[in-house]
Image 1 (cartoon, helix red, strand yellow):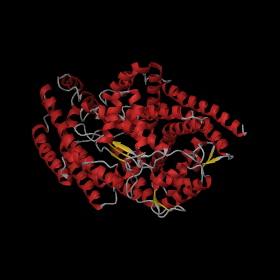
Image 2 (image 1 turned 180 degrees about the horizontal axis):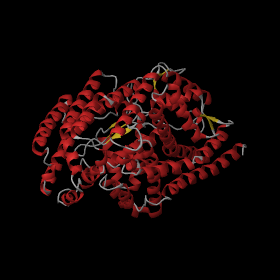
Image 3 (image 1 turned 90 degrees about the horizontal axis):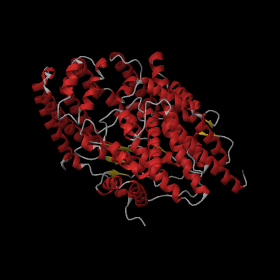
Image 4 (image 1 turned 60 degrees about the vertical axis):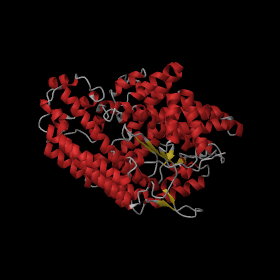
Length: 602
């Protein structure tokens, strides 16, 4: 029996600001501003004159400044995430962003002067003792050299971002978080996330009703969200032109340490395998007893009307025991999230939708935000976000410059953690029907993370290309491009309804992190391959996995994957990962035959 009320599962953000609240955030920024001014006075125009020890000292001071600004910035962002309607939270976030940008502007000279050094001189400096937690970061910074502007231009770009793209992103978050959906039978309108969770219901009439009401709820502020999207696409086009990036995705690929060609190879490999989700959706229609799925049927449970729910303590026990069976290191780290108030779980009014993990800074600890509704999917989401959290936690010794991996590896630990929990749930399933229901969720998770994300990448490609060639796009035009990308994925297996053409408009990645979404597919296929290595090698693999997570972003993606014995340069790598998804589908197809035969429908 549960002893934890879900409403009490709230994070404590005060350690980020030494228990001083908003005054603590301002104090951290005051100190950072003072030290940034002193740093600029000491080093501006003189980076080329640094010797090895001087570079080590300078990088150490920059790391300290990153910690100070990062603590204040994460405190403000996380307060805002759980209550976007509170004006005090919005004001704090704006103030912290403005002050953080001003500090960043004072320090811009360092990266510009470092990138301007000739290669031989830079390489000699990189050999200095004491750079073990910054060497990869410093090498990476030099990759931006062809795309950097002058110092005065970079300062203008940085300072204007606060009232430019950052302001538009914040407005999108506030508008989207305020969306409420009016459902029949509900006492009052519900948050968008709660409404969307009903699309897992086995009741098709309910699913159709929810989809129709979601589309209605998206309509009132649709033009606002469309204008935000148009504005940010135009802003990105300007940035890319000024920085001489050849395509809309090139800057994201550079930050991901991935070539345009390798990303295109991933996208094409997934698109060539679109028949995998189509096969599943055709089978699912048969299981649900309908001729053809509509878009609102895709997440419907195939487990019957009595899908099991999980209270908070049950979810906690499942995740911790699953992690513990793999490694005490994972279980002990994950337990701290529950015991030390690093998680915020309940659905609340004006809380940001979805789920995420904030790494914060190495001197603090990660935080996880959920919108927990007690569904089985939520247990897997908890495992997913705790995987992110453990990645951050284990990599904290890499320091502020190398704790984070490129986005292309950011999903490795999350998908791996989710897969451990899925295996536990599958082992506990007692009937073909319950095993099929779990396999369905697993396959649909892969479809959502691999195939749907690539389809969303295709939507972004279509939208950014059209914005650059056609000018401002109408809501109808954006809807056409969204439908085009989704229909390419779904083929003849799913009917894309008219209402679905506006559902692009609540996806935050399109606004805040353009080009982000393909990293989910990259990470999912990589994580599945990592899990395959674990199945093949058994306990001997555990130390390699812990080493991989602990390395953070201290190496290139290829070098990090090599720790686990994987070769990302192999052209067949992505297809091998897709084969693992295909194998799950074939297992589900066999179980479905058994279930349908038992129903007399085979």
